[in-house]
Length: 263
Length: 253
Image 1 (cartoon, each protein chain N blue to C red):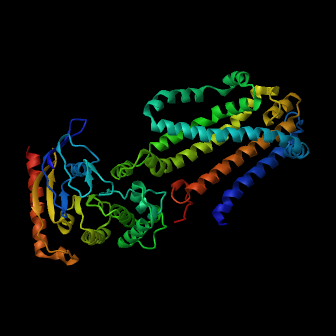
Image 2: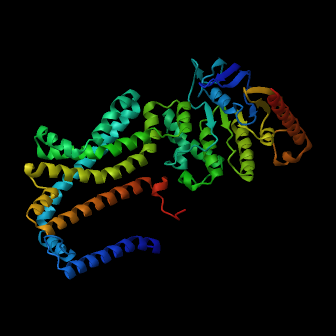
Image 3: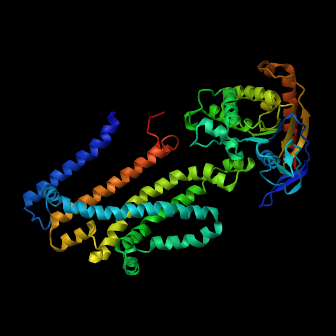
């Protein structure tokens, strides 16, 4: 590991440690009650004690998030593919994708929860609506970004539409798709949490968002912070996994995946 | 080709009344200033673009019902136009992938062609790892791998430095000598066109026309020393004069 890389990890960690120390010092010095602002040490303690029950809730939320992300990748990619194959389809349907994207999920989630009886599926649909758009929008741009001269070359050699798609358009679109997916990863988590908030106790199993609500009502603020911490960590892990996936897939050729000074 | 004309949607006449017969095995250069329609003409020859007027006929060995069998035409663009996600090997293999035959014979052919353009050992490299000149060699290998009857080159060396350009000129001549395809080479360099071609069509713009069609009577095969001979200089001077006269006439209209 070289010095630059070490810095990239050590510097943010050091800043975090200093901020936590200041936080702890203020809480102790001002004697702030834990139901208003608990110190980091108390939060860590709560996380340790309630860890197993919170972890169970995290799994519920994570399942919804990952299912929504997978659906966003597959359906989003599929929709973009359909758009690229048929201009009429793209022109007539794209505005509705935008409408679905700009309508606040909080506003339509109650409807979805009424319509879709199965709770898991209802939450999944909500999270998917939030997450699918970046994949569709990015992949559509990617599929239309194939090099014009390469397209001419494919025509010259008499390539079929399927061949042009497979050898030219799909590889061109891959970096765009992955960039969309990275945004969708965070959005899927947000979508899952928002949907759980709206659903409240409607769900048979209780996810992390519901635990946050519950902790708020009971003024169990340290537990609220502990749940919040788990959500943040989940979001970061999802991002890192998708980022690594993107780097692995593009490492040979795309500028975004090439480390500085590697040449 | 007879009476080829091309008008773009904007109403600009890019080409006007072009008559051109290209003989089998000829190395023809289309020489002219930028904006004279050289590239447009080349795309019409390739069938990538339809002329607004006139007819284009190709007598290629495997032409059937007006459709040219794929792989009979090779095209090299101004940029290497490689697929960055594929290795050198896969880039050169592309024409076979599209025509649906990738067997042992095709793989051997690809290896041979990569060798012929001097890139043996770089089969597994990605385009971004190569220099501009090397990328252009890959592009040429891809165009030649199907043994085309007609090789079309659109200012392939314009973006390269002079040393690389001269080396690639010699390579191109050597490869042409091996396969002897018909070559149409677009350039705006007088010296390059005289060095490479057996015939030069001088073009001028607004609208794009062929103002002179001259044979290049220089010994074959061309050697580097040719560049300093008086006969080479004389032909370069003659072509330059044609070009200058055409430009003066254009300005006076």
